[in-house]
Every structure is written in structure tokens, then in C-alpha cells.
Image (tube, rainbow over all chains, first blue to last red; front, side, top):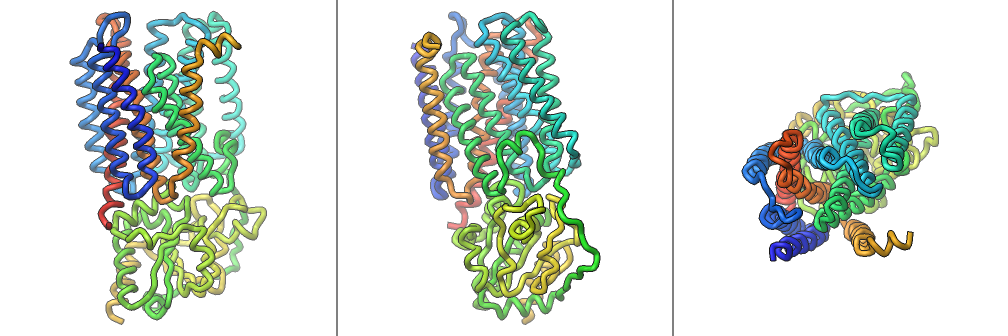
Length: 461
Length: 99
């Protein structure tokens, strides 16, 4: 009977995961979808604690399990509730790393208790360990980099080193499975060390602009690691949940790569981002500055204004004031839209979440494919803290590292105003020709501060 | 090869169907929901906690390494699950507000 109840809870759990993911695809049902999946998870966990049996023995150490879950719940809840919306990407990355570590530990303990077994068993244990560890160390580095605690580190040598490491991991795994006596029990520790190092070095050189792809990839890694746990225990819910996330995450990663014109192989080898060199800045080019008052007048008498948000908006926490500017302009009869680049910010849809937080209505958020044809009849484009996603080099400079990446063609608009803190290059480290175009005007300063003053100027008009 | 297939037929079906299902579910998601989706998927792979509970639940009471690591695994898995779902819910709450 208990076996039946256990499997029933797993079946329901699996169904809720699928339904939950499916519901997350539609804006109205997304929240319910998340709750449905959470309920299924709770059921599967409760089912495991109550009904799981191994060789007739029920789950033991229950007080300790509940204690660990209690601590995890309180800490996880607090972290998730306290994190600022702008820091969301690193939070997701952090939680992802915890899942990876959990998967790796499962393999460690399993091997520690049963170091001998069939080749299939060993392969599952080692793959779970390797993928879980890479996901853990990679996610933690991604977390540190997004939180600006860790700096980029790049160079061509790292690419080769990573390739060599990956090959080494493959060789050691194969040897440990085919002839377990080669390394004996130490193969576990060798693989643990190598994978940890690989995870760190694989994320290290990746530039901020490419972070979304990496987080998504690591997310699918953890899914796969969870699936290996499912193989290990013949556990259906771990299997379906893990594989579902593994394949969904991989597809999401591929979609993002496409949006940035990169191949998945490039991501795995870790050869992009920081190593990008691009065209050097030519000192004789000048930029045109614009005053706040002129900006206010230009916008107030425009027919159509398009706001292009980027990571700078998130850093400056300027989403609310941005919404205020939009309302002020609408009061004056100006049509305002937001043009959202798919990889603006540090996660796909990052800008959407931020602007939703500031109560910007959905229909105002226009995706790149729809926004670009409308640029030519836009009077003013306001670029708030975006850089690489509005770089014309992606279209006209075959030597640029971002050549071929679809970008927002803001230069088609009648005027472009760029809000920027300084003339520093974007995350990909490339000079942006847009700033030097005759139609472009620069408005230097902190995004939040500048927008606030701009709203003030508009009030006075 | 044939033996392997016949022995593991059931699991091979589950794996392949789950992969296709994952692809199918994702390919219909609008870019706008990518972040909550990634976060939601992140919470779902927290299902790995079940493995951690099994490890911990069947560890011998004198096997301290297994007990300590198992405890840690359950804790980290819970962080993944709870944090993941709560963060996703917070994100989606904001989408809901304005309509």
C-alpha cells in the first residue's frame, strides 16, 4: 500500500511539474502554474518521507531530515523575500548552485556507501557528480560576477585550458567506469576536483552580456544532474522533473544563443565574452551633449517616444521613475513604448520583470522584432543604460565580436538620446559607434537621477 | 544492445518523452516570461532533494560522513526548492498587479 501511495505522489508530482511549466508560458496563468508545481513538489517530498522504503526499511533519521528542511526553508524563504528585483539573476543562479551541490553530494554519498557496482551504476554516479559539481561551482562564480564580487578573467589560454580540462574529465570518467581499478576509490575525488575547477574556469571569462546564456545553461545542467539521481534510485519524479528542466533549459539556452548569434558550442567552450577585442576607440570622434531642458522639450513635443532599457536601468533602480516619465509624457499626448531587446539586462526577460515591478502595462513592452520596423517613425528614442543591444557595429562591422547579433535599430529614429554615466564601453567591452552619430545626443549622469530631473523639467513645461 | 534496450525499455520511453515534452513546453513561451520560466524551472529541478532525503533516510546511524553530507544535501536541496518557488512567485506577483 505504501509503495502505491509513494508512486501515486510521484505521478501527481510529475504531472504538476509539466502543467506548471506549461502554465508558466502564459502571463495570466503563470503564477498559478508556479503554485501548482510547488504543491506537487511538497506532495512528492511528503510522500518520500512517509512512504519510501529501501529493502523493507522506512526512511530513518527523520528528525534530522526535518531539521535540515526547516533551516533550508527559513533561509531560502528569507533570501528570496529580501532580494531586490534587480538582483534577481544572481539569486536564481545561487539557488541553482545549491541544487547542483545537492546532486553532487548524493553521488558522493552513494559512492562512499557502495563503491562497487555495474558499469551503468558507476557511470550514473560519476556523471551526477561531474554535472552537479560543474553546476555548483559555475553558478557560484556566476553569482559572484553578477553581484560584482568577482571580476572577469579572460584570455585565449583559458579556452584551451578549459578544453583540456573537459577532455581530462571525459577520460577519467571513462576510465573509472571501464576499469574501476585504475584510480580505485580516489577517482571520486579526482573527478570532484576537476569538475569544480572546470565550473569555475568555464564561467570566469564570460562577460556580463553573455551571462543570461550561462545561467540558463547551468540551470539545465542541474536538471540533468537531478535526472541522474532519478536513474540512480529508479525514482520517476526525479527523472521526469530533472529531464524536463534539462531539455527545457537546453532549448531556452539555444533560443538565447540564437538571439545573440552565437553557437552553443561557443558557450560550452567558454571562448566568448571577455576575450572580445573589437574596434579600438578613435580619439578624434566627438559626442554631442544635450541639456535636460532640451531633452524635456524634445520629448514633450514628440509624437512617439521609445524607451530602450538596459542593465543600467537595473543598476540605477530607475524603473519606477522611468514609468513616471512615461506617464508624464502620455499626459502630454505623446505615445510611449518600451522596446525590449531579448537579452537586455542579465537574464532573458530581465527588463520585463523590472518594468512590471514598476507597474508598466504589458502592451507597452514591445519586443525587438516588432519595435524595429517602427523606429523610422519614432521621434525620440531614449536609451537608458543599454549599450551593446543598440550597437550598429552588429550590423555593419564584420570585424566586431557582436557582428550578426540582432540589435534594436535606434539610429533609424529621428533623434536618439543616450542616458549614460560615462563614455565607458559596454559589458562586451566594445566601442559603440552609435554615440558618435549626428542624430545621437548624450545625456550624462546617473540614470535615476537624470530621469528624476527630466520628470521635473516636464512638470515645469 | 538489444538486451539493454529491452531491459530498460520503460526508462528509455520516459527519458525520450520527457525530453520532447520539455522542448514542446518551452518553445511556446513568449520572451517576456523567460526570466520567471527559468526561475520556475530552477525550482523544479530542486526535486533532487528527494534523492537527498533517500540518502539521509537510509544512512546508517554510525556512518557520520553519510549523515553529515546527507544533512547538508537536504538543506541545500530545500534552499533550491523553497527559494526557487518563492522568487518565481514574487516575480509573477508583479506581472499580475497591473491587470
